[in-house]
Image 1 (cartoon, rainbow, N blue to C red):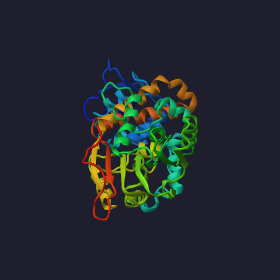
Image 2 (cartoon, rainbow, N blue to C red; image 1 turned 45 degrees about the vertical axis):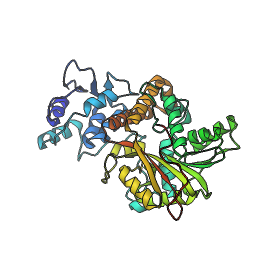
Image 3 (cartoon, rainbow, N blue to C red; image 1 turned 120 degrees about the vertical axis):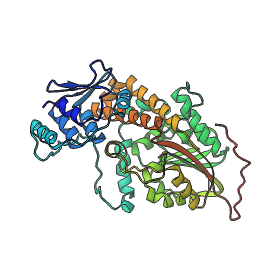
Image 4 (cartoon, rainbow, N blue to C red; image 1 turned 90 degrees about the vertical axis):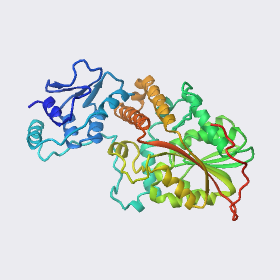
Length: 419
């Protein structure tokens, strides 16, 4: 039995692309625009021992599974084609034959590629998982890859969160600037106000607000982000108004802020920690202060495990829930929710822009971080784009205010911002 025959035996229905194997066998439409090639026995072993996205990712990242017809910086087309494939459980005969062909006993997987991260104490009780030490380890894995690499992928804005496109043909930079404008306007910031930006990344929101006369404190767990942001603040002459601290947001003791922006942090803190998270924000706001929470969500509020590829290669310990859960937790913390909206389609456009940047700078990116890591990023961004397009994940803004004891605030009739 050939590799192609085994592949064909576990696929329910026709293959939408061509699969070729190192034993010379192949299956699928001959004239397909996209071809997958299993290069060697190790690649097949990855696929056999970790069915689903984890095995595919391991084989692809190591180069044991190659894709022809698409660029590795943007494998969107092959992922879209593969999403229609339905697999069935292999029979005993196929399992024994595959084990014989691969020379395996008990289907022990090959060692995973070095880009795969499995945080220590993986089965730690959920309530204890997000300690400051463990969170710092997870953030380091994802965000301290290389500032130069991020400059190539994200572009001049160095903004690693969903943009907001004023028009479908706007550039990525225009859309990121528009996103900061929207957050600024929703928070109704004015010169002289104080803003806390938690999970501030490379300081894009910090610098946007400081340029407009707002005093800003940013906090990030990534040392590389903090160093880059501090340098950018100095170069723009914003040091009198802007500060980025390399710290856990929980260690920020300042209070009395007019507003708090949290752009892309909620995904990292764990759903069980939402009460403490939104309570922290409430306690940092003055009466009448506003919160804008921007984060990736699910289209439902049911508990769902993060996929193995995302968990091990991209966001260790990351967790998503629906916007309904987030709104409820904000309310339970004592804040009044004024507005929420879904920017799902905008994130699909953002990811397409990042993939285009990675394709454009592929050789330089590979030289900077290695081909395996560059492949991880292309795979992750293209797959995420597909998820946003198909409403498997969403991006929500939740705007809230801290009222006084009588439930009052000083905001005008809303909305006071433009889309």
